[in-house]
Structure formats: structure tokens, C-alpha cells
Length: 492
Image (tube, rainbow, N blue to C red):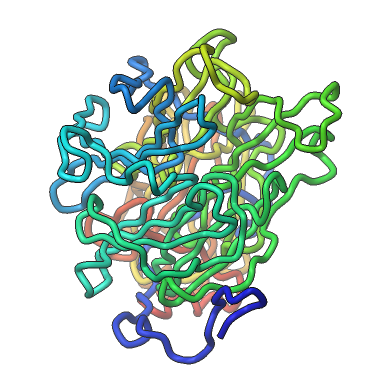
């Protein structure tokens, strides 16, 4: 099935993907994050605070060194970590400012994600180039897709080659040697920005974000069953009435996080004195958005940048460009981004190097419920669990946190009251809630319950119920359904 102009669109008929992959079951872990009050009955005394990642003290970690890197190593590209070997892999663009284009896509590796090597490859002898100049790489994102049974398609890439007014797909077995997925483009969108790309872990559908035309700086998106046939562009997120008139969205990278999709939103800040329709002068920093389905988006901490610009004159003082996805490490969420000391004002000649840096956040550390000297309290909506273990992600080293388990009516359950809870007075991502006496688990499992949490002088990031999951991974979870509480016992 094709759209006007011969560009393929999504087919409702069976695709090859349906025969080789089935949706995953929901994770067992239930988690309360506090992006919004959807799962809460009330919140009293807590203040919501967006948490900004800590920039690495050794930034920038990657600078232009080779002649074909010119003055720009650009994260129109992706940093991934191989789940088997643990090796960090980076695909980055280079730009020749004299040609106003992105002629090369290059590849680098690292053992720790901070010190990088440029391996010599067989594509352009003596270099780490994976796409030569004739491809004219622009806006590429790479996806590692280990669940594809076809080994030649394990790595997937989307980009807009040069001046081609559409998005083209590529496959690779090793992330180095690439071939076009098909001769024609896969999405009819003249996306003059970094394309977002991920695969939904529950449905198995591929998801992409992009701009539909240059310089229409808003975020559109499509999805696909097979990476070849994509839905028509749908508007996902755009500036709203609370944004300044000069704010535009340069693009958005998207990453699954539990039942959420997190969005790393490139905020383009133009000038009131620039009357040109193209608005080519401005700075760019990063905002944080989230969605429960990848279509309906909200901003988290709107008005505060998630990763702000560095000091004026510093290597990342004027523009930030994020990698396709952060890296989820055992005790850290790591973000990679390119930064520039110059504004978005082509041509980029003799105005300083574009480099790449890193920043880190604690697991679940996007937003904190913060409280000072006065006690604060929240009560969840009802839900049900298989096992009674509760883990708290918080910094209560200056104060304390207590938890009680209540019945559906909000009455404390004997043995699981505040008076039975050992005070949490530590900083950790998985602090266990403990009771002074062994309560009867049958009172709280497989029936509707609520949690009531009290805290003072503390930052609360999340509350998790692993449901018997051994060594749960913090990025794999679901939130309560806010429907019949017993539905929370299904699909586990």
C-alpha cells in the first residue's frame, strides 16, 4: 500500500514481524514514579523538583581529531552498550562546514564509555568511517534489535540522506557494514533533524520521531511492524501556550522506560530580532518529556531545562544535541550529548569545535518529591501485589521516611502501620521497607491495598514492589492500572 507520491505506508495485513515475534508479558515489578498524580489519591507537603543530570567532570570526552572530522563530531548519532560484551559503541556524524552537509558517519568503541577508540575499518581504508561521503549522512539513529531472527538485520538505521526529502532505512549485521533496507524511502518526511528511533518492548512495534519538513520545528512520529511500512506522520508534541514565542522543538529522541516512553526534547531558542521565516539563529538545550503510549506527551518540570547549557564560552555553552538513547547501567543512567561553543548560525567556520560529553543521573532520578522540616504525606490509589516486599529510592540521609500498608478504604493494616515501620534514614536506590515485627503477609497480598508514605527532610524518587522478581532491573516495570485493583495481578 502506498501514499501519494509512491511512498509506502503502514499495512494492516500480516507482516513478517508478526510471524517471528510476540509481545512480551508485562514486568512483574510495580513502580510508583511521581511524574504526575495519576496513581495517587493525594499528595500533601511534597514539592516536585526536576532533577538535572550531573555533567561528567572530564567533559568533553570525545573531540575532533581526524581530518575528516573537521571541527565537528556530532551526535546526530547514537551511543549504545552491547548487552553481551559490555562494549560501548558510538555512531557519530562529521560535518564539513564548507559544504554545509554531513558527509560521513563514523564508528567508535569504548570499554568504559569515557575513553574512546577509533577502529580502522575496511570501508574507507585507514579510517573509522562506516558511511562514505556519497551517502551524505544526515540525522542518523541506530537501533540494536537482538530479537530479529535475521542476523543481517540486527542493527537498524534511519536517516535522511543529504537533500533527499524523505527518510531511508538501512540494515546491518555488525553495525559497520550497512545496506539499504529497500530502494525507496520508508517515510515521506523531509526531516532536517536527528531522527528518533526505538522498538516498543511490549508490542514489538518500531517507533520513529522526526520533522515532516525543514524548518517545521515540531515533532511528528510513525510506527511500523516490519521497519519498512510506516504509518502516516502524526503530530506528537509542539510548543504550547506556556512556552515563549521564540521556542521551537528541533527534534525528540525517545526511549522506553518501564511503561513510559521518555523524550529528550531539543529546545531551540531563537531571537526576537530575527525576522527571517527560517529562524536560523539561536541556541539549543534539552527538556524532558514523557508519555505512557508514545503519542500523548507531557513535559516534566516544564520551565526548567533537563540538561542546561554550560557557561558562556564553554564547549557546551550554546547548543546541546542528544544521543538517540541514554544508557541504563546498574547504578546510573548515562546521557551522551554533543555540545558547541557557538550558536545555531551556519556556516560553522572558525567558531570552535563541536565535541561530545556525558552526564549521569541516579536510577529513577528524573523527578523528586522533596520535603523539608515539615512532614509530608502521600496516599496511593488501590492496587494488588503477589508479594509484600517494598523498595524505596530516596535520599533520607538528612531525615527519614516511613511507610504503612492500608486496606482499600485507607485504614492501616495491623502489623504494617507507621508504628511498625523501621524508619528509613539513608540514601539509596533500593532501600527495603522493614517492619519491627513479622506481619502476616496474607493480610496484604492478592487483595486491594494502598501505600501511605510520610517523610521529612528527604527526596523521594520512586517506590517499587518487585513481586518476587530476583534482582529487578530498574528500567523494567509497570505502574498500577488505576482500574480494578485486582487487574494488577494479571499478566505476571
